[in-house]
Image (cartoon, rainbow, N blue to C red; front, side, top):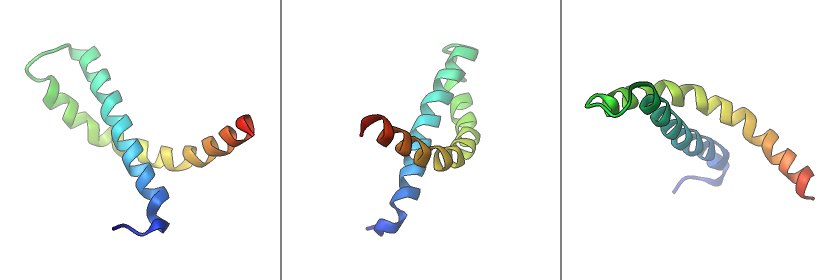
Length: 73
């Protein structure tokens, strides 16, 4: 079990991983279409997307939570 103090980091890793996987997949498909190489291209693009997305989520998530609190409270 992972300690609670790492919850924010784990959230950022999971969210950025899933979102970058989705966006890089859509982008790859739109760029090259459905070819035999599409999945290979997608999975080779994903790590770079994740590398950029994770720090972005770590910065943006707290700001987003504050904005949501203001808009809903």
